[in-house]
Image (cartoon, rainbow, N blue to C red; front, top):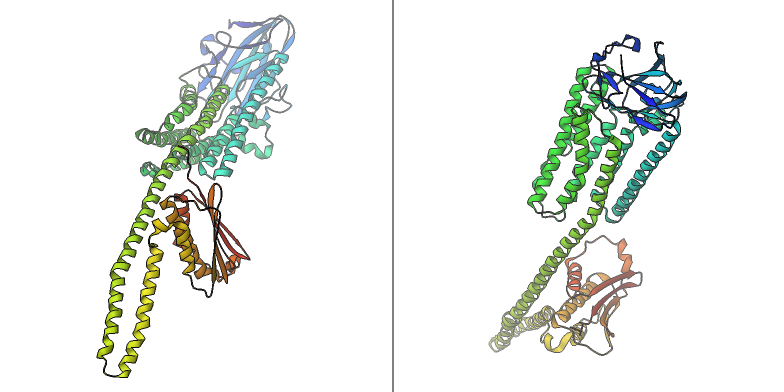
Length: 608
């Protein structure tokens, strides 16, 4: 045929055969099973940079010629495992082609049929000295898949060195992925956020896809061979992309102010479409229905396009909200999108004749994406903290407004009770006293006498309620004396209250003292209502740097757990709200001996 032969010198290491040494049959015929039936005319063969039949044919032939200066063995590597079956022949001169022993299917790559265990197809070629050897390669893929691979020749010892580097590269990749997964799972353990699980799922699925796509599934046991089929690995990619869409939406959500319309997009619909198309393709392959397989591939591409549209919608929404995280996400995904765009469309469809180093590019793209996304977590955490700080400021402002409104309302109610209802009760008592001179008999006098204690009790209750709402002259007498009056006004039965003060009294801001008074008042009310105690004590301890107020009782304490459950009242919630508002710490300790509550109020700083 006049084909150019590649000369192998004594110092040969490795070569990737290309034009003019590498030829592929222009119009392969499936019925041809032996090199002897191949056309000999050079016009029927085309020089190529690599073998690539795209998706037009699922059977292809390649050939090349080599001439060795010495008798030696070289290893033929076809850089793919996506071949359903493979056959290799050699011939010297006019001798008939002889089959070469080696792996014939993608599940035989990591077996004794290859010179060494390898995740690509590997055959040993015995080359005689000073003779031209022609090598034929017949490959077959499942209908609808693309046949593409580089053809390389290796000196065995240099191949082993390169294989070791490749294994180390994958080991480093796996180590980085496992480190990222470890950090993500630790974050999930602490924060319990679904976004971490979705990111972990995405990392696992894309890493599994990369490993299986590079042929490492050949090392799986036969019981797991189903994970290693050419179509099964699409499920990993499908689940990974679905997890990434769900992750992207949550990753771009820093606060609850984003547009809720984002949630209405059917995120799982592309996953169902791709899964259905994949199962359809697998069934059609077993039935040898080539057109159904190709149709399933088209449907699958439409499903992946759906993922792209949904993700693009999230990106547009984030750009409208001026969320800077979206640029990190775009930068991280761009490398992977470029890889899949080039590999899936340009190469698989045959537009580009030279296949890129798929797995090296995929590893680089994945690591670049994972590195950017992982680093992006730090920026996202900063944005989340800023959003939380703003929310805390808003909450504190609302709390302050709420407490101030409560105090204003208490003052108004107390004033109304004292001025209006108090005056009315005083007038009522005076009018009752005036009625005595007009009573005609002793019976009516006796009935009027019964009203006098009731009006007196009403006046006393009114003063007590008004005092609790707003102690008179609180700003003048201060917290200590107001609490002393409050404790002194408690009935002696059934609970005996005591009041203790220790240390030198220090004045606090009026707002702080008033809220502390409210907290203690609510605690005393709870003792009356729930504690079932005999004794209770309120202590004010003026320490060097803080005021410590303790309220304890000898009531039922944690034995109340055996009583019918009662939801926490609004008073307890208000206590915590008030304590947070004045910058104090409120501690509760419950035991069999009763309940102890400690309110720690730091003194205001004197340094400006």
